Length: 172
Image (cartoon, rainbow, N blue to C red):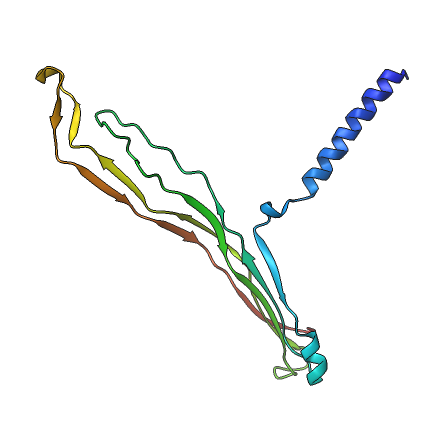
């Protein structure tokens, strides 16, 4: 094998390894939630009893890119003068496991609630305005026709599907 072929092969393998490493490592901005553990270990030792384990998940809101103005035939101003801004985030989640001292029988040692963080998609309110002058009228020597001004408010939007799971089982 020639040295140029070996050098090319080494460069290709290096690029593939770098791309695979970059794909595996996610930056902090790409993570949807931040885990927040509730430290109760010191209280367990001080009280000499088993306490619940709790972990929260806080979402990171990420603004999206708004739809630009839409030009409509027959109007002087664009359709969406103030566009709606999309924001993607989530509802906070929680994972709580509490000890259950065999109240339901020998096989049930804990009560758990798992409410994962759910996606939340929102759109901010927008505004659509039309001027008091219409499009040029060929019948009126090219002058625009007068019309009533129009203002429309684009309603905000909120979409989410929260879920939760309640269960009992062995161990904590």
